Length: 235
Image 1 (tube, rainbow, N blue to C red):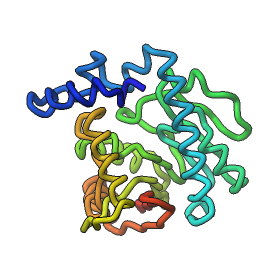
Image 2 (image 1 turned 180 degrees about the vertical axis):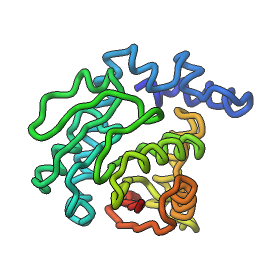
Image 3 (image 1 turned 30 degrees about the vertical axis):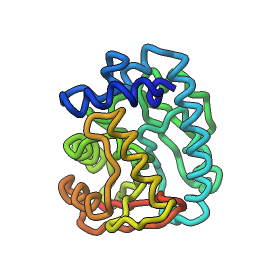
Image 4 (image 1 turned 60 degrees about the vertical axis):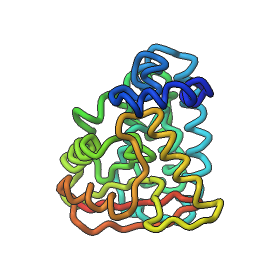
């Protein structure tokens, strides 16, 4: 996959770190990753399939351990791809009506799913209204400023007692010298390669983002598995 090929890592990362500006992926392919995928149907399909398979593992674990979907009427999945995550959630929580929200070139490949409305748009502009908004592995793609833009749009789209549920890798405050601790920092390097300002964050950093976006300062966390956590931001 172009995002992680050896030439990009070996030659473009050094230039990006030394020169600033465009990250390694942009230097190698001439455009930001998601913009580039909008022009490359093969890569777009491959990426969506890969994310769907990864989501299947994470969401199955989430549904076993997390109970924050109880009482949710309308759930909006921001950056939901082709809708597979919503389909899994709704199979366990049949009271939920789903809204799958993503970029137009992604929604164009989304199949019709019972109870799911596909909506094309841009999360930096506006987000469909819902009782709860779900973000899986979205915040780690963004710098702090863009995270706050997205979270503020989420806050505005939520009902009065709504909440945001984010599934993210959470960095340990104090890293331990064990192999399992290496993965989140490897992911941090992938973010550095591919997304301007993208990074993994600690729980304290997520709490600050929530407060800077008008959410309450109380962040509820639920461990899922590996280094993934469910984070609940209350309006």
